[in-house]
Image (cartoon, rainbow, N blue to C red; front, side):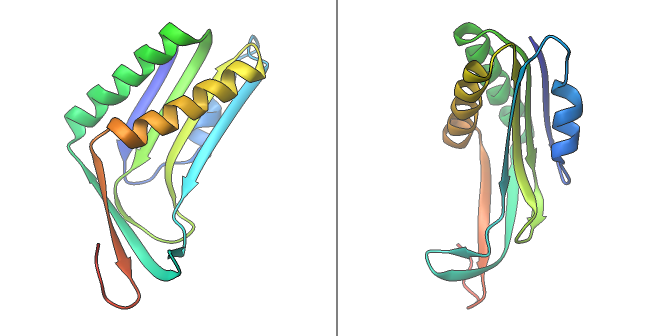
Length: 133
């Protein structure tokens, strides 16, 4: 399995798509998580993402290893943004390529759920009323 893992200020779906495309892969699943303009009926101005990069990369590599054990995946991408992100900006991209779509969907869902639970990437929410959470 080929893996691309990156944490940087600007990430794109195109970067993930370019990496996963392969003639042997009939199933390509891409998840892009974007910043919403509201949370619990409160207007969000921006999010700020920060991380402990070495540990975050290590945890993302662990997730890739788990995926390789569970599914027959040819390519996997995990990209996460850091810094200020505004409504509509992409914060995370997960992409999976396999011979068949079902496997790709299952693996993609597993990766995003596990990443959110285990990878040390933190966000601060900045609300229109001035509160920062």
